[in-house]
Length: 510
Image (cartoon, rainbow, N blue to C red; front, top):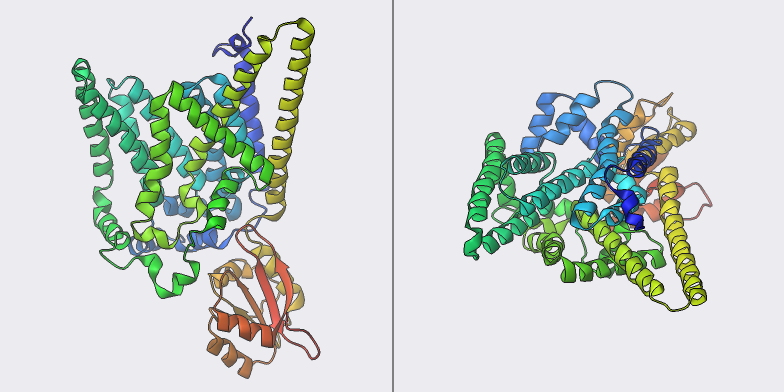
């Protein structure tokens, strides 16, 4: 009997597996979701969204659409704020596991979908963003929802309902973040390729008409949805296409300019998998095998992968986005990357299992089967442990520990004779957000970034604490080394927070 017959849609085992994936995914993404400190980007979203009028002003003046800020505005009305503003990310992050299973099954088969869903379930990067009020987990969910709709359209373009849903999903994703365009444009290019393919074949004239109707409908939905926002969208487009100076290129942001070097590219490979070198490259090898499988068995999927991974870089490197492109801007990569990894793993297994079944002699066949299952079990255990280790590490550390910083200052700073200076990179927002939790809050002086500002404070206040994170000016680092000592570091995935104080007699330079 074929083992895959056990995984038909009506089989109870399939429903049980799906339930286990959902429950496990929800636990990993909800565990401690409100306990860890918000990091500065989340805190900035909360502060920008204290009122509806404020969030609209910030959204119109800034470079992000309003829907994410609207969600944060609604959710921060009740305690606990840290939990509630992250809850949508955890919910959509969990539902994305189901989408991965469905898409993997539609693209290839049930085992491939199950393998991809299992990899996403344990993905440290996905768990991390499923507890983040920046809502990159929601962007990935909507990108994969658009992908599933596009797959249904390619299979049968005639009903207009999937086209309508595709337009709605893409519009919503763009309203959450403009970086969603990096996931939408590859799908649009892929659908245009299928449309051109139908145009070249006279026997597919009916399909071409439905492609034209459906494409027009989806485009109209997006345009109508963005009619109230066209003026803002046009200004943002001018900024990032070079017609105006890009926001990210202002001098005060140049310290964050992205270096496109080997460590940068390796950071993408690590975030799509894990840091452990063996598992990271094993996963990349399965992705390559999945691409080979697509080339031989589903050329359309291979082309989708080219659009999915290559087209965003053509946009990034020719626009102002190139100044600052962290891995999270391309979180949609995670979806197809793990789907291809699952396809490569399943194809490799089927190939090896077929070779084992073809071996003559019962004893040799049993020995080969034992060796195959043992090697697969060992590799699976290594992969699981590597993924689990990083997930546990994230749950222990978090992104930035502003709660811990404020608690430390509350215990060690004398508010009657000492003050706290906040450095750059929104340090003042991280401190100010949790400052209200202090029993005796000292004076907080914000945005002391340049050496002249710090020296002025040292002249009028002999006992000074300095808190900062992220890049700093070289002359500022030199001054801190000369006049301050490093007393505590608070680690986080988005950078350490440093706590320094003016040097006492006989101390080192920190």
